[in-house]
Length: 102
Ligand code: SF4
Image 1 (tube, rainbow, N blue to C red):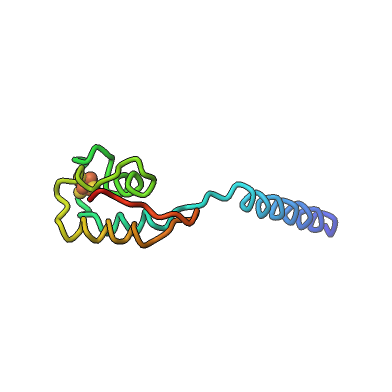
Image 2: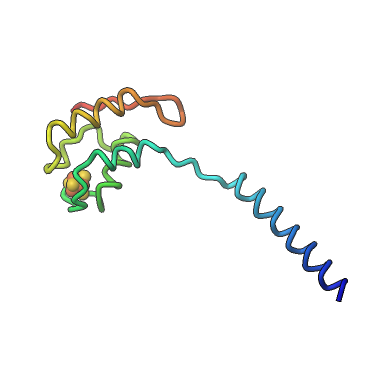
């Protein structure tokens, strides 16, 4: 009985250690700006911009796949200006900012 408990503890500890190391090795850096820009977009998730939703458009803006907010037709001028200003002033994980045309 005692040996079964010890074996279970050893196996559990070993698996926990492996999972802990794997989570550090395979960690995916998420750019927090994507979530912020998603919040600045209209939030209709209509797909009119050509992306599956506002989060897709936000990711495209942050990664430079799109260099303007123009594909989002429902986006108002204040929202566009806020996104442009935010990306211009906020560096990503690599320390670089994004300059949009508008
Ligand atoms: S067009 Fe604008 S509101 Fe519609 S999904 Fe794209 S970013 Fe969102």
